[in-house]
Length: 289
View 1 (cartoon, one colour):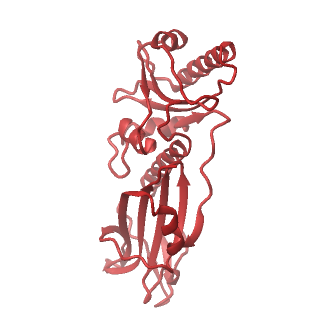
View 2 (cartoon, rainbow, N blue to C red; view 1 turned 30 degrees about the vertical axis):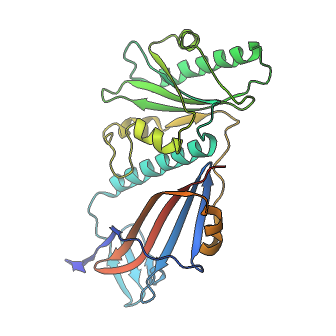
View 3 (tube, rainbow, N blue to C red; view 1 turned 45 degrees about the horizontal axis):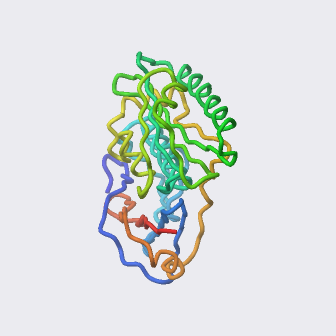
């Protein structure tokens, strides 16, 4: 479909398509969560028949025409949305890779008694807090104590920063801190300690907790603060990176997920006007190890 000579490329939610043994699958393992992506191409007009020429035009190899992209929103806003979605998706994956709801994992919230709107000060305060934590670790009666963290910096609706800290002890199967100890080490305001034991999909739990859901973010305006200050989170050196994707057939992927629980299943179609180019099916399984 053309509107004033402009072809519309869009993405729409669609019904899930059936899966067959010889379909290609991209699989990413993030802790207890297995993420599968399956693509189904239109056999009549696959995406390879369209070549991006620049930010404004693409070539339709079927007709030889050079067509402009339909721009519903500004390129800069699209870029911002993509960057935001990718950043939070990466954060969810790295959380799930390292936190799986064990007894040696905690969620600690660090807030301020006064309004702190400068993230640079927040970073300085957290670095000092973590030095105190490491000192506490070195003086602990348990010499095997080994603390690792992911710290997420979040502004409130008023633009006041605070920290969500995910922390685990890789040297022990249990982690406990008295609130008074953490409050004294932090020294800036209210703290809260939440055990993560027994929770599934810690990444999703965390995204919901900080008010982010892909495509439905209540913090659209607050994202500007993240853009200005760049960093969404920091992590300790011992945090495991997200594994590289595996590429396999669906029949082999089924063996990996046969004891898992389906917790997410969504399909999208990439369309050129009224013509569907390809479909994606994203699925996630909870697999207890």
